Figure: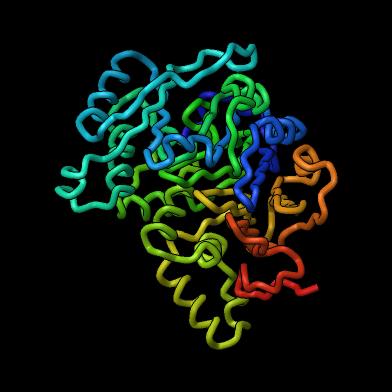
Length: 385
């Protein structure tokens, strides 16, 4: 991966700020609290990227795919819109509203399209609606220079840019949107370029992921994903995370907890100490999904419709903190970020290595919360009190 596009000397081995908040009851709030949270984590980034994803933000078009696309030129826009017009019923299109901000410079043209696959073409393709959209997203991103689909889910959207995250929130006018899940990222790139499409979150369909760390297994993960039709075009290692989640959970049907155990797989010596039944399960996962194991230090927050998850690498080389307040779940790279969203949480804890924290819409139970007693992460029991 290229180092071009940023200052090699501006490095941090533990940089990047992460924040996420979710109403377990579906209550929608503006982007102001998540903006305040990621602004507190300002020193974890260096102005070379930031962004947000929000869920429940397009209730009036909740059954349509919302494509957010950035263009670097009229020719790219024309080519991409020709693909969209041929592949979809385009029900509405508009510029993504922005306001000038001195911290966000040289923006590309930013458009959004609400689309549906035509029934006849969907039947002809033999694909699900999601796989049909995925194939067109991959086509635009890989075949049309200077056009990048950076969000493609239903009733959700991503907003990202080069700059500090709080400036990006103001640029995209996030105080005007309401959502029941917000995730945010302040970027400090260490070995990949700082550019608009390479900022976090990375998305595909309903998936959005923000990441702190480095993925040393990027090459293996990328080649594995290419076997299933995914193409990595954003020149940033985190891109594989979004595609792996889609492959493991949506296409292969793995439970979220098991998918997290694939990404942050236990070491073989840990597997050898497990009870026989779990030993067989985790041996099988390592054998079948060895190329989906994510090596290197990482902490991620990812979301999809109805769910928000935080998880560390298997030896917790990056910080991650979670909290609860009434019917809200909060996750951040540090407690200060949580208190920017919720000044007085009821409970704050640091998840164990490889153990996911999972909030689900309509459930009071948060997997991974101390005292819950659920099984999660490395096949271990969560402490019950």
